[in-house]
Each structure stands twice: as structure tokens, then as C-alpha cells.
Image (cartoon, rainbow, N blue to C red; front, side):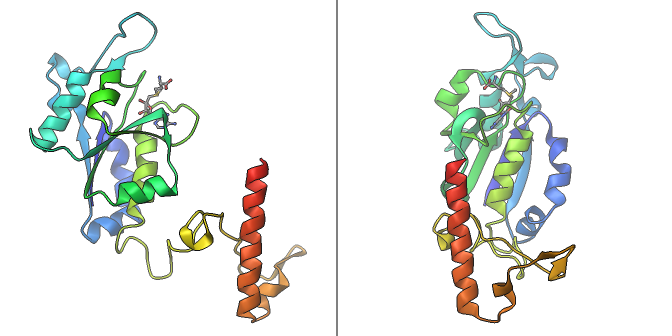
Length: 223
Ligand SMILES: C[S@@+](CC[C@H](N)C(=O)[O-])C[C@H]1O[C@@H](n2cnc3c(N)ncnc32)[C@H](O)[C@@H]1O
């Protein structure tokens, strides 16, 4: 998998790139690239934005700038699946992650200011994706969220001791939240772990975990 993040702040990803599971995924053949819109902008002085038609506060990222950056990276031929990050997009969930993780190359367009000229959404992007119904100052954190959840699924990204199979919202858990985990000590300040977990009865442990996932799922529904 080849992940290209288009951004005005490539340095924001320096820490992220060094963290597991991203570092491990890269060591195992994935690529993670930041692409600075300013490198390809056709405008003078590295300019990338302009004021909105119709008036109003804030600046808007220009369509010609984004198109030039995509052309600069992919040339005139086919472009990879291109996702524009926006609070108004489709909510990121496990099924969307599965879909995106299957792409050989994925471009994530990270915005700033008031966001993008809408022609970027209409003509340059294949999908609009949101990480939740709130507004952040920029698309760098959303891009990291999307990249993290995709890259931890790639071969070699997680160590043997970790597993992405039986996790919250996975098929293995029928799309339910994961059951709770406990570790030593078995009692702390009077707070005991559930007896069943030290019973040695694997069938009962499995049953208890399933019940916990179901009741956590019901609790989420009720919120
Ligand atoms: C300040 S926001 C723009 C908000 C936009 N004016 C609106 O009201 O929908 C700037 C950029 O941050 C990113 N962003 C902010 N919140 C986001 C979210 N919840 N999900 C995905 N991207 C987000 C987008 O890339 C957006 O272009």
C-alpha cells in the first residue's frame, strides 16, 4: 500500500511516521509520503488559497493548486482513489477502513482554513471522509487517524502479541465493541477482577467476553 498525504504542513507527520504501527508497516514494504501543495502551486510566492466568492470570513484552498499537486505526483495518467478530508464527509468506520486499506495507492487531501474550493470535492476527489461531527483546525490530525487505522492492518505492522482480528467492531466480534481486559494485580484497592477470568475454564471465559461485548454494544446504542 502506498499512502500519499497532501498537506500544507508535512512536518506535522514527522513524529507519526516514526511510531508503530506506521514504522513497522513501512519496514514491511508500505510507503507513507507527505506531499506539500506548495511544492507544485502555479501561484507566485507559494500561494495556495484565495478569498471566497460571495464574501465571508476565511480563505479557501484553490482547485488549481490541488489539481497541480495531484498532477505533480501522479502525472497526466490515472490517479489513485482520492479522499478529501472534511467534517461533512462519510463517517470513518471499520467498513470504510477495510475498503480504503484494499487500495494499492490512496491519496488523502488534508485541508486548512475554510477548506477546499468545492470543485475539489466535485471533480478531483472520489470520496469525502470525516473522522467525526466536529471541526478541527486542519486535516493533518484526520489524515493521521485515517492513516493509522489503515496502516495497522498492513502485513507486519502489528507485533505477534497484538492482533487486529478480535477488536472492537471487527467481524470476529460481530461488529460489537471489544470485551474489557484486566491484568495483575487481581485485586487493587478492593477492586477485584471478574472471577471467571481466573477460573481456567476457557469456554466460560469466551461466553463472558461475548456477553460483555453484547452489553457494551447495547449501552452504546442507548447513548
Ligand atoms: C477548519 S476546517 C474547515 C471546516 C469547514 N469550513 C466546515 O465548516 O465544514 C479545515 C480543514 O480541516 C479538516 N477537518 C476538520 N475537521 C475535520 C473532520 N471532523 N473530519 C475530517 N476533516 C476535518 C478538513 O480537511 C478541512 O478542510
